[in-house]
Length: 251
Image (cartoon, rainbow, N blue to C red; front, side, top):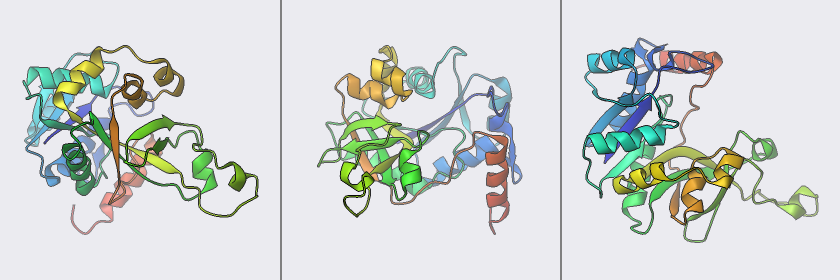
């Protein structure tokens, strides 16, 4: 498998995020370490910024410079696949550049899940939701899937809505699942995906994976064997992750 890490310098809430120090290493290097530990055949950092390129090459990473016009990390990955001439059948994992606490085991798991399902274009992960607060939070993306583990829908809304449980007419668990935003793709699929216009449901929910379902392609899911720590979106997130790394005996 390949692991491609999209990384851009601009961020409305945390400019220069990939180069932020996390216990003696830039954030992007912490993410790169996760990918290397997963046993990927190739790890590539995809960026449009010279500062990130210089830093990444400084710690030995392969870097692919991409366009400044990409609307998403997936579009950036599509360009990398073309530039590096990655074979169509190769499995490519999209590891976001602000996920320094992504378990290497989960990176391998989504890649292995896709490899085991020839009829799927994408693989991703989920875990059970335990609380009503999490279930009703629009920042928590929910997923429902069929009996074979293929996605039916993703939403910021609470789905499936347990009508009797919420009305207090029954007791039990929610039977709801949170989507974890790590993806494995077949390389040939990514270019097709990037060429499609955003779908109506994707635009409504602001969830890229809905473009896949809208086109009739299949997404297979696995229950995460190991949960990731939260990613970094804000200065407060960055401080939390710094403390987590500083508390480890070996970094």
